[in-house]
Amino acid sequence: MGLRGLFASWKSVAAALAALVALGPAQAQREGGAHIAIACGALGIELELCRDAAQEWAAQTGNTVEIVNTPNSSSDRFQLYVQLLSSQSADIDVLQIDVVWAGMLQSHLADLEEPLGDRVDAMFPALGANNRVNGKLVAVPWYIDAGVLYYRKDLLDKYGYAPPKTWDDLTRIATAIQKAERAEGNGRLWGYVFQAKAYEGLTCNALEWVASHGGGSFLGLDRAFTADNPQARTALNRAAGWIGTIAPRGVLNYDEEASRGVFQTGNAVFMRNWPYAWALAQGAESPVRGKVGVVALPKGPDGKSAAALGGWHLAVSRYSRHREEAIDLVRYLTRAEEQKRRAIVGAYNPTLTALYDDREVIAANPFFATLYPAFENAVARPARPAGARYNQVSDAIWRASYDVLQGDSKAGPALTRLEDEIARIAYRARWSEQAE
Image 1 (cartoon, one colour):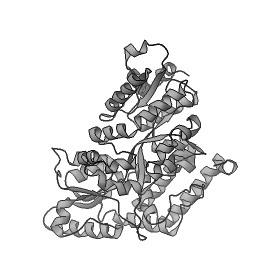
Image 2 (cartoon, one colour):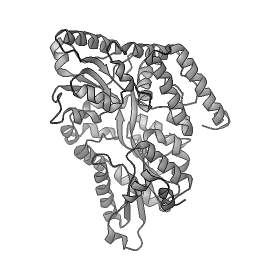
Image 3 (cartoon, helix red, strand yellow):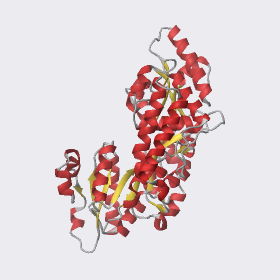
Image 4 (cartoon, one colour):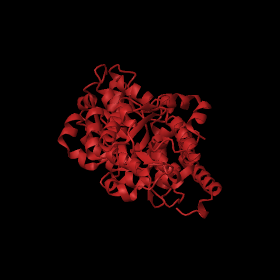
């Protein structure tokens, strides 16, 4: 199925195709160069940065490039990719993919190990581990995200606390400040907000709780079923204890933006969120401007902090008619100079670790240095072992976690059911008959 036929039957994707922007029309007249289409995101200045860099590459190489403005919704974008790649379409050469799509799309993506493996080795280790699937490197990390802890510096200073290092610290400090502030008339203040809505974000939060307690990541890299263990039970029962005490029951409907809304209006001491919330909290109109700090998420009983790995990567379609040129574009976009430019102009977190020692990058984004430990300790969701079944596995994780947070189940029975459900997913997918 070609792009035109596909998009005619899908409204949201049709809108994305309508945004195809041809770059360098004069270059398009050249003979001999390849014509490369790259699917970029369009949140904030993302599309502008991608277009500018792609134009530079085209001007330097004599090739031409098109920017495919894909849907902002990651779900819509994933479905677009699945339909295009399943039909072996060559319409998009370079794809910007979510970190959890590497396993699901791996059979349609070119192996980038030989041309770009060394570059990935200079990035945060969790990124390379996530993108090396079945013996091949399926994507090159472009920018990284990881869960971090935001805190109210002014309130911690007022009551003489340092930022929490452990989950016990967080619970204790949140309880004390919430009680003290309410006694002074701030009745709307809560201790901690996070993402407990029944969706992918809860999978990220639950992974962080469980991994920081030494409970693994629900499904091992070798596809071992690891969900049901004492550490995981402790972690989920602890989180359930926050509901209604230091977190409002409304947190059960909070996603990233709902959490940010409560924190940024000054009604929470702590918030778990992604790095994007920093710039918004420091905005000119933000009630908490200048009052916010960011640290790595608290450690569990064994002294380990774990942050769910996020971010977007660049992959090359296996069906591209110009694979070498497409790989060269990925090489250009992920090089240190371009990542530095994106960090300074757009605050995108580099994947190359050396850039966190770059004075210009840190001067533009002082909080990047704080984020480094979070990125270094990032934990990948079980997308690589689950492969094409990741969405089913993630659904099972957040449903089990939600049952515990809502009080419908204790962690023990919920994790037993979760492990059984993952086993059923594995049986239906015939994992035992497949090589990793």
